[in-house]
Structures are given as structure tokens and as C-alpha cells.
Length: 95
Image 1 (tube, rainbow, N blue to C red):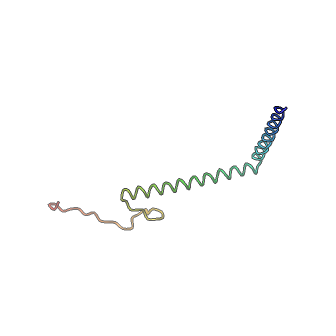
Image 2 (image 1 turned 30 degrees about the vertical axis):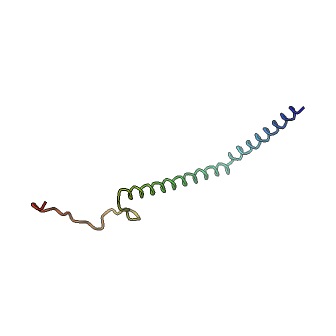
Image 3 (image 1 turned 90 degrees about the vertical axis):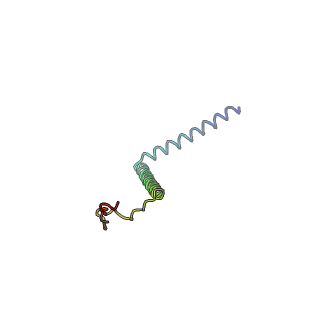
């Protein structure tokens, strides 16, 4: 008798689980559910891009520090240098 009761409870539990799972799947296939999934994917992609940018900036700063390079000025890169240093050509016989 105990064995039948256990199987009844197990079957009822499996039925409740299957019904809840089917309801979730059905809700996820509605327009609102699909919109939520797309929004979640978009947010995930944005977070990943931010993490990659932050990691790249951190690694660049670490490499610049290790190599003794000067950090670039913030903002867009200049197309033309604002100041130039003239080349100094050594005179013959002074080298």
C-alpha cells in the first residue's frame, strides 16, 4: 500500500512540474515573451562589450606602464601633430 502511495505522489509531482514547464514555454513564445528574451540578449551583449572594453583599457594601461610609454591624451586622436620637433642632423666630424 505504501508503494502505491509513493508512486501516486511521484506521478502527481511530475504532472505539476510538466504543467508548470509547459506554461513557461508557452509564455516565452508570446510576443511579450519574445520581446523580453530579445531585451535580455541585448542587455547581455551590452554588458559583455563594456567588460571587454574595460579589460582592454586595463591591459593597455598595464602594458604602457610596463613598457614605460606615456598614456595618450584623452579624446579622439589628432590627425596632425600640434608641434613638431625638427630633426637634428649631426655635423660631420662631431660623431
